[in-house]
Length: 468
Image 1 (cartoon, helix red, strand yellow):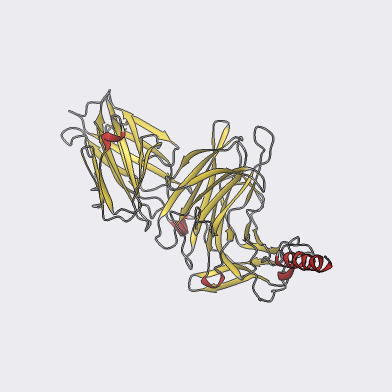
Image 2 (cartoon, rainbow, N blue to C red):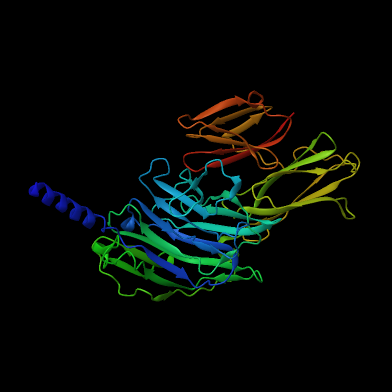
């Protein structure tokens, strides 16, 4: 009996030691201690610090106001390398601690669910646009007011392909919510294996909510989680294996954090790290949205259906305005803030395009509130209404009448959206290289629609069509 008890004690001690082998969680808190409505961060995972079950957070935040139940709101987002096959291995994660938050828009390849454990709220993630080791990736989000609620949108830019994606818009049950205090970053070994991992962070922006001026992040405070390294902490056996600082390579200067393995600590816990900046506006680094095509089609009821495309390698759309001018002034117009919209309708029942020429102008404001170059075309008086400014669709995505055909795209996934941006149908065709479909068979009614095609390689093709 005594021998059994001794063995049990050995196993308990061994388990306790093993449970304290996690790499210590570390933080970089930028010098942006004010309320803001837009944030932009860049993060890179180097090959030397690439370890499974790691979270590289770059979008931590606390709210400025409570929700309608007087509960505080906060959230975070970043990159993960996970052993969970349903989420990984490489995903973007974006979570909000708010029980009553809901989705106002979600990319067809973005998943969301309610979560518990460390608080409760809404969690979203995608591995359909996997990040690549060694490339700088951009994550950005923004708040804006919609009635008594606040909306929060997340966009990303894939470092390898250069393609931007608007992944989700969250409906937050709070009035004029904003990002308060420092918008923190961290690195976490949630699996507890203790192997070496590292992450890189650079640049970064936050816009002041008070006067809408941009603040470039120029310093960050590096620290480790003191609770992790205590005698009963999860990182006690790795309490001296951490590092933080600044470095540079061919891409420029950056901040870094590393933890675990057998590295020696840099002895600078609590220190402030600085990298000077010369940029004054994100436009200096990211440019603006670019409209690549505009189409207009007369539909029943004296309406003009307008659709457009944004270059996916430019900053995504935030809001837009459409105006029609008869040469002496504006005769019809519309303004809306629906970032995912690429179609809208205007009432032209009072116009006479059969005898009068009109100019249609589309103005787009991107997610960082910079204007794209206007897209302008004419219609009427012999120029016709259909296919204004039409740009041919990509050859791999074709529509003839109600027939959609896709070829040469590996593992296609197709989303069909109405003019309000609502996802009507999603077709997951992974395992194929293309398909043909009569869209009448899936119950689409008359109207304008957008077909969006994603592939395993990250290619995004879009096509607008009118269902008669």
